[in-house]
Length: 185
Image (cartoon, rainbow, N blue to C red; front, side):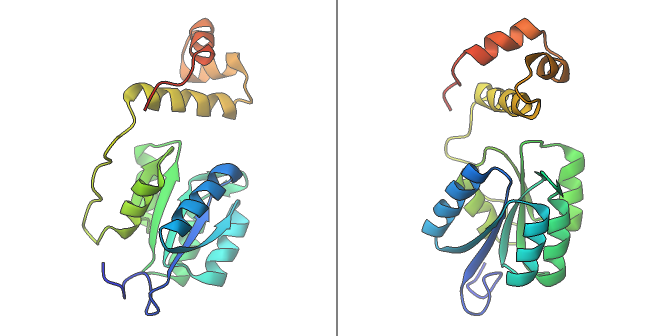
């Protein structure tokens, strides 16, 4: 991608980050600012759509599930105001159906949480038809499993029984897993 690509004629790499996890959002915003992006943040579909229309960013990283709806609505709004923008969907709920929907609406890539800033930057800056390089240190399978269990546990309001039911896991097994520390990356 050249400097005149999605970055615009001025060379400004404007980026919209939309996620309802405020701590993660602020950490990612700081990391992306250090990488030369002019960052705007939003924590809801409503705010994301408003900032997309106001700023028409060249790049966007949008969480799929937000408290007030689907990040796919923000993708649609971005496509209206910036058809050439590069949009990355980011979610802890990776599945084929949502990946296909995101791509059909205009996202160029789909990353699972937790994704680090390097992987996000690589996906944003990859040229058309070009895949970003694989991560230098991908998460281990144990770590991915741990992150998934923790995410479901939080979504179930830390209810062990409900989490075990949704994960199709015995409650005592889940309790043992939750009592352990997270595995190394």
